[in-house]
Length: 367
Ligand code: F6P
Image 1 (cartoon, rainbow, N blue to C red):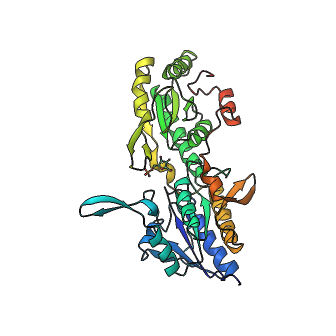
Image 2 (image 1 turned 30 degrees about the horizontal axis):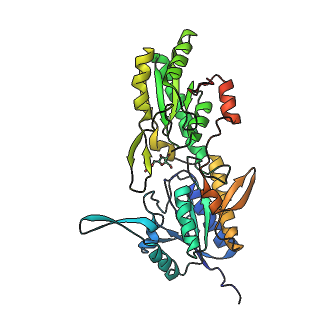
Image 3 (image 1 turned 180 degrees about the horizontal axis):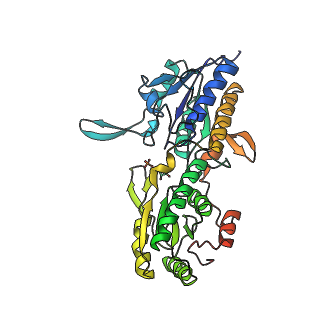
């Protein structure tokens, strides 16, 4: 029996937004329409749009026109909606329901032949769940955190690092003028990629990342040593997921499924640093600005390459795969490989070594 031809595909964006999502959406629409003559639908707000299917947006050459440099996602996203464990309110009470069959039914009802899921590890786990239920799914790796396995880089990371580095450049002048220590918190969940890259690019003096537990004494000693050598200010970059040796991460809240919302380590550290060094210390949480704004050229090109490649994966019916960057090539890898484990900074890796050679302190014994 011959396979049903592909005529209509859809794309959804899930998890936290980031610069470059619109580049992917545009590339998918252009490639699917121009190269294959397929129809393309945008599913709004990640999988929510397949639970409530009035949330559908046709993606034509006109609707995706001019969106390449725009931040965010024109089809919306959420990092709170897992159809397998959907939280709803009934009779004034919260309950968890499994809406995955409803999503499968709506997918069929919309006459879709494939779905491109753009997201990080959480979204890819959901995508894999639907693939296992029989949905023809392909993935595109996205996250500012760069923590997704099986790809060298996720799009969004480069733009976040650009923003974070610019923040450090701006903080430097005020820190220098006031002879202060600035403790700057970067996003990244349980990985230190943004902190490490922006810290090196932004010439930080201390970088604290989750992969290298730190000692506040060592950090304080490093700051005092800088002062003794005539440096009258310092920049301390701390990843939101970093923790002191033998201590805890700083969590804002924890959801019922165990997901932790991180934040607040800079605020905890700053008064201790001030007390131990006697240096005036201020805090800056860079926050969601790292997810905002126009994508860098790198992310525009990577997002465009990913979007184009995802459509070709569908044309070759390589479902259950995710596009990935390996070296300079875009390849297809299995989604299971991507969600197997988190891609962490290697504490003995080249970049950490380079940073140490630049005199950057990580607050550990090697400092
Ligand atoms: O995964 C992207 C990210 O920005 C993380 O770096 C951060 O911990 C989290 O999302 C913040 O999530 P929210 O937008 O729910 O505050």
